[in-house]
Length: 367
Image (cartoon, rainbow, N blue to C red; front, side):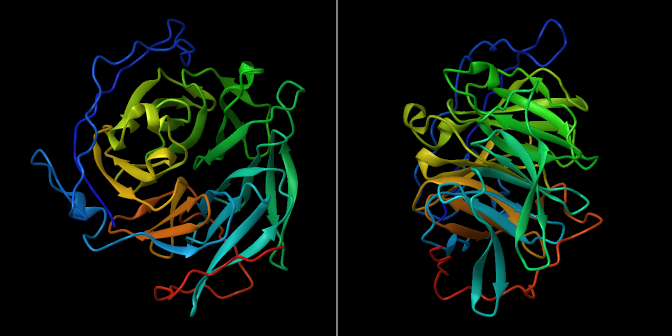
């Protein structure tokens, strides 16, 4: 069942007197939006604002297409909408294949060293962050359907930095990625920038307590980052390679429940209209914001979601990873991801076609 409710959001801005991405935390907002009200209807508008049906059809619902995973994460699509994801707990990377029986998962890599985020470049190269080692790797896709890791970024300043989480690749080949850090090594926390060839990363200090999901707006001028420890999505103007402008509180995740219980968000996706879809694990929801940070609604799930990504041949499928499975939500709006329509797409052994809805989820299976 889907539930959409509308309210307003308040954004606050912080600036760095040096003109660089601001390390100082901005002043807290003077007010926060009230939680979304419950609704018996799958789609509900409020305050006279219409348009939610332009994103998701009223009868749409998230269907589980894969199950029996341990911690599905990091979904991404290639230029043609072919979707890949990680199982962080098992250390596997999977390809989602659509066929006559529905969706199936094909393992392309085992012992991934904690792959948590995946992203395709415009040239069709698949990159991954390894949370446990702190490395960024290219997963070179082989003719037998498997992948071989190749190191791209091995360290920062000669030191490995475990905790890397998510990444996004711009259309010009720049890679932005996050590191959540920890209490023992807070200097690791931040947003980083490198290139597809693995230039020395640039670290940007940010006011997020635990930087997690990261995505770009369709025009590439805004970077969004989700705080895993606080109920906020942040936005940054992109001023050039490795340079971000002053941060701004963009979207308040507490609209989907008690902020003390919601805590923070995880991964996110952006659609072609610039709306931002954010997985909020403790609320068992994906909340949708318009490009100004106004919450448009939410998608409720039966378990904690970790991330989401648009994919499919027409770009109108939202793949949502969760603790034990993968869900698919048909959308009216097309998704945006920088690799879409790029110069190269991945050729996989099995033919890809858009299937009818599967009668039952497909189990990836044990190793």
